[in-house]
Length: 578
Image (cartoon, rainbow, N blue to C red; front, side, top):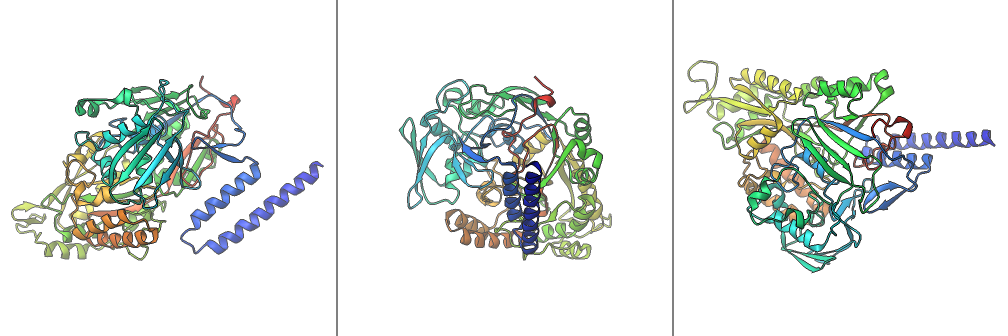
């Protein structure tokens, strides 16, 4: 009987292997290879393991959860957030990773594999035929961490806080410009009325980006008090805020009274280690359990068999994959001229950056859209590294070395600018040096200008920079209005580089209004072309998500949206922390 089972199992794996091999051959030329392969691998994993997935309270959990409770996950983070408020212009990706989903929960969440919105705090929802009315029916068993029920009042409070002009949250409030009002029907039903259709309306009024705030905790009469609250977040999620040791770590502990299925891990600790070399040392010594390596580290460790005995090296593309860029502040005397911005792009050797500095672990990009998605236009080719073309463009723009000191000037202003970057990233230091060296060859002086990440965020929103390098995290459904529309220049919005283009504004507005995905993709490609011609950014590269994880954690499968550590557990015999 045992031999028969082994034979059957072997045949299953052989057949699966042949199927996958044939799919790979037929899919090789497809731009969507990664999507179909991810789906095949996920199906294969489920079939072999025999573990089915059921959606409970919006979380993807196993049918009969195979894990033990206990232990902690300690995550090494590059940078410390400036705030833990989800409604703040100072919120960054690190704050979102810590709070949204863990502490604050939305009405609707994305399914990790289907990448579709599903109810979480909501029991159900309805959208009118014209898309102008969205009604949510809340669950009757949802509670904040202090035991207070979540009601329509909390939903409306969250909405009114976001759109309050005195609340410093321009980057969030811009998403709600098409919402007319929110109306309480009763404690369990709330309805949103739209001014006009918006293709991301369901995601926006489902508060996927912020979660719902408890009114009885966050209520304010003075918006300045709300803006000043950067710590002690409280919500309805599976984890509670325990402490924030500034400069060291944020600690979350499991909410033992959580209304939904509780995760297995008792604590999640975000330890701030700015230097990736130090992060790797902490991982190797098992002081931390997970880190985000840089591309060079990842390539080296992936080839290290001894390292892979203790740690899992994971690389995957997903819609949230970030893109990286150099931004040129058009409100400075240097970068208001398109020709100058084009020249700056021509002096950046992106091929060398990807092949040498990134060891091939990235792709050169030409725009802001997900490089594997339909909004991105693959026919747009990167502007080449070309110093002679850069010189020609600078000459045309009137930047000429009139006094023979080796630095171009115009109207008495030498072409010397500060290049801001986060000092936590060694890679950014290398890019700054490369830019400085290449710019010097065309008569432009670049002054590296590093700051701590929290300072960088403040200088961006206050527009206290001339040029910079950073990345934008991707979105599941992309809308770049927040980053490039001219209305987002003022009021500390996210159009940091002050990009202004009437045609681009019209296209971004049309994209928001269209419910036709194919038409939106066509408009997005038009916008991509404009951005390529105008170069408000020098678009550098996009890369997969990289993670290094201690192998004591189990059930660490990769979904189409990445890791969901609500599923993770540590077998009793491997647990380290009580």
